[in-house]
Amino acid sequence: MQEARASEERRLREAVEAEALRRSDAVKTAVLRSVSHDLRSPITAITTASEVLRELGDSLSDEDRDELVSAILAQVQRLDRLVANLLELSRLEAGAATPTREVWTVDGLIARALDVIPTDEGRVDVDLPNDIPPVEVDPAQLERALVNVIENALKFSGSEKRVAVRARTEEGEVFLHVTDHGPGIPAHELERVFEPFVRGTSANGNQGSGLGLAIARGFVGLNGGRLWIEPSSSGGCELVLALPAVSLPAEVTV
Image (cartoon, rainbow, N blue to C red):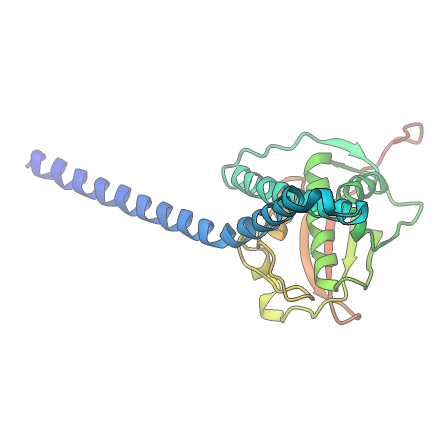
């Protein structure tokens, strides 16, 4: 009787392990399919530009050569951001992204994020009142969250329209509003866009990797905050990031 029970338990355990393995393989397949285009596109651009430089470099003007080099660097940065997002998502899902919190001013965090965003996308208007209190966060994690949110707004606003970043304080929280001029998101999709690998279509018709907002919400949540989307009066979307404010003694400066 005990042998039969042990045999049945073993079969159940093997069935559970097999199902877990099947789901893991399915997730890996979905990830590979989702990012394959995002990896292939910059690699193709880098390869093409490099071949032109190798074959025609001596006959190109300095301007054309500089343009090709700039294109290669831009695509390398794009690859770097994609790989970084994949690594950060894996750390978040594994519970390995423990924040190391420090007291930071909001303008300091926004400045860090804007330094990372490519200069040719510097179409960001920042409006920060002087009395915004500091927050206690992991600066690297909040930098990544802000970079992803602002880059998302720039991408969906198109190549000419600007993005607005403003801050306010209410009931012990600091609210950051990032407003784009994109096509907007249907109400039933407002939560879904924070799921990994859910892709939107930007103003120029390109799709994102579907990682940026998922990672941003993950890092904001780890630091005691919230991140959500609201419709904007501009017709686009307004991403709202809320973090607990820090009350410092009068003699402490940040």
